[in-house]
Image (tube, rainbow over all chains, first blue to last red; front, side, top):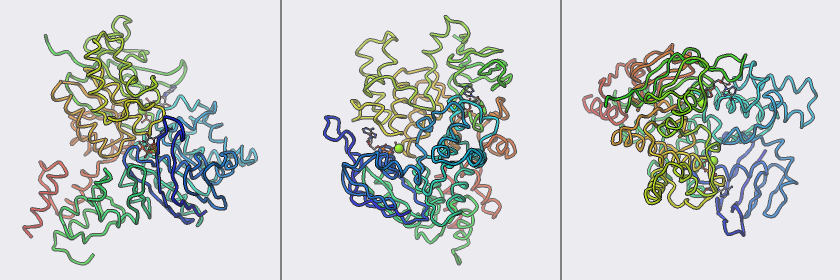
Amino acid sequence: MQIKAQNLGFTYGEGTPFEKKAVSGIDVDIPPGSRIAVVGHTGSGKSTLVQHLNGLLVPTEGTLTVGETTIRPGMKQKVLHHLRRTVGMVFQYPEHQLFEETVEKDIAFAPNNFGAGEKETAERVRRAAEAVGLDESLLSRSPFELSGGQMRRVAIAGVLAGHPDVLILDEPAAGLDPKGRRAMMEMFSRWQQEQPFRSYILVTHHMEDAAKYADYLYVMNAGSIVMEGTPAEVFQSPARLKEARLDVPAAVRILTEIDGSGSFSLNTYEADETADEIARILRGGGPL
Amino acid sequence: MAEETAVQVNNVTYRYAEGAPSVLSGLSLKVEQNEWVAITGHNGSGKSTLARLINGLLLPEHGDILVQGLNSASEDDKVHIRRKVGMVFQNPDNQIVAPTVQDDVAFGLENTGVDPQTMEKRVAWAIKAAGLAGLEHAEPHNLSGGQKQRVAIAGILALKPDILVLDEATSMLDPLGKKEVMSLAGRLHKEENVTVISITHDLEEVLRADRMIVMNQGVVTADGKPDDVFREKEILDRAGLEQPFSVRLREELARREVVIPENAVSEKAMVSALCRLKHKT
Ligand SMILES: Nc1ncnc2c1ncn2[C@@H]1O[C@H](COP(=O)(O)OP(=O)(O)OP(=O)(O)O)[C@@H](O)[C@H]1O
Ligand SMILES: Nc1ncnc2c1ncn2[C@@H]1O[C@H](COP(=O)(O)OP(=O)(O)OP(=O)(O)O)[C@@H](O)[C@H]1O
Ligand SMILES: [Mg+2]
Ligand SMILES: [Mg+2]
């Protein structure tokens, strides 16, 4: 599904004394099959922007096209309900999307609601729980009586079980233990690759995850997109990232210090690859 | 007066409901006054439960918890414990109580007997320290995820607790914001002898601590200096942990015969060491 925003803007409480312009002049163009990351400082407008993509917020300026649907200011949220089916949203705080009595019912909500049969639903719940590393013993528990990381996993499983075409992931790994974070990000990556039309849009403060799990980055600052490009392109301008209160990943920072000319190339941004590059530079350069 | 142990957990067992499996099983640990301890471990290992036991929100089934010698099971002591232990919860929504940022940060101070002038000063200081200047009159529920987390932090800072418990308090902050909160905690630790217990999945944050405790299924499986514990790959793996990037990089470099001196620990020191190596070749 193609996603295209043109000059999109959003003001909270428009026309009230408390109105607050959160994003403005946003242009994005996301073809099907994309892995996108949105990065930016606290309060820069990331969550506001991505909540437009499944119709949760309606722009107050500009237009947004999601697949066949064009959304303009003043449109009723109700007519956009169908988008929730194709665009799945993992909220920044999992507590905001858990509501059922048991973990199992919570994960089953979307498939049930979208008319999957009983058997199909049960199968989807099982598969989603497994994908997010949720122990079966937790299925009968209340989703509110779990640890923070367990709630996060339930919320993600619930979205996966709805079989969306596009996943909006707002800090999906926050609160996961380090191995869980890695496993979850790898799972999203595999999910995306299973179908050529699947996309995800990842909001993250982890520059390493943005570098590794996205092919294209949007950098936000104070409600606007101030930089965009492949991770390598964006990381070539550390000074501009600093202006946006951000930094490059540790691997890039270290390599840039050692080799000012920036003649290094990173793919995974992991320690082994970084060590290879450092060793190569210390040997006096040599072929990439 | 002799320095009292900040927190003493003696053989504590806890379960959330009768018949439910125990979440902590015979857990013992001591945190001395003015220590900085990081607690890590897999999701569901019992870290937040331990934090809630330390500030008396939960009571142990067996064993006891002493905070500066005060027993959390004693009704009389509990009030005092709440004043000594300032806890920033994992989910800031649970901590928001007032309609404006300013009132929210002041709320906890209201019943502590602090005079209005001091209170005003403290609130202003905490708001600024937590990076919320300009948002004093905003409604906490209408803030971004990271801004809410800052409100929760400010509310606890204003209380000036002796013992600061941070339960993943910076998980939604941008990297710079994280650094700011950590250096603020560092200043309180150094200048005002605050004891810091930081529960976190952020491995770089763990490296800042004097001591690191690894929890696994309700028990402690490692307890020591971060540098030492981060060498125990088996223990880390079983507890859902990894080595921090800097530690992995050092090992990967050593494997390629690029040796960085042991005492070059920070990123800056590592980079200087590497630059010296470069100029030698
Ligand atoms: N419901 C709301 N009502 C009014 N203002 C809001 C509301 N939600 C967010 N804002 C404001 O809009 C701006 C953008 O917020 P948003 O949540 O999009 O930021 P973010 O980039 O997701 O930040 P974070 O990294 O902290 O999650 C912030 O200044 C915030 O205070
Ligand atoms: N309110 C509750 N009622 C019942 N069980 C609970 C409750 N809160 C947590 N648990 C269970 O207790 C165990 C420990 O949870 P705790 O929240 O202490 O873990 P944690 O180490 O903080 O995990 P995380 O890293 O995910 O925050 C988990 O198995 C969890 O499911
Ligand atoms: Mg957000
Ligand atoms: Mg927890």
